[in-house]
Image (cartoon, rainbow, N blue to C red; front, side, top):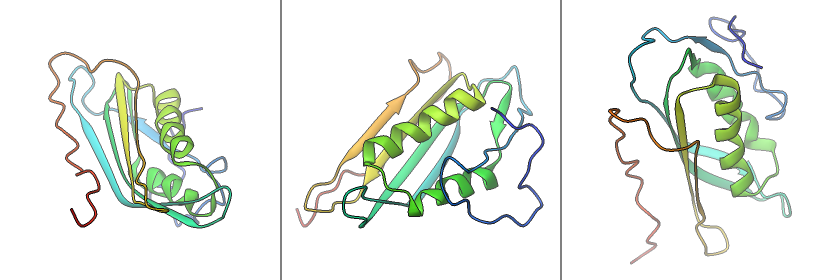
Length: 151
């Protein structure tokens, strides 16, 4: 459910214990009637392997075209930080973040790229989007290079 009265903005807020406990806040889009792209980059995203408990690291890029609301950035930061002690596979984290934002915020379009750093010798990149990008909106490339190791 979308929160329109920000819980975190201007307040001291503790990091939630889990993504399920995290509260995402949304505020009115200040430019309704104009399609534009919002990008969040989280180059130090962390979660835990659900099997071994070892840390996993990713560079997340979230792009969206707002509808009636935009996500409040402090609440997004706390939501993403709540994954630090959360055990889930890369696919579940990446797609789950995108789907939760899409379901609650109801943007016109959203995509997320999860560029995961290698562990066990294999990088895993995960991508999800809500559908085709809207016509007439500049959608820049995410430009996160694929992992090349020493090559």
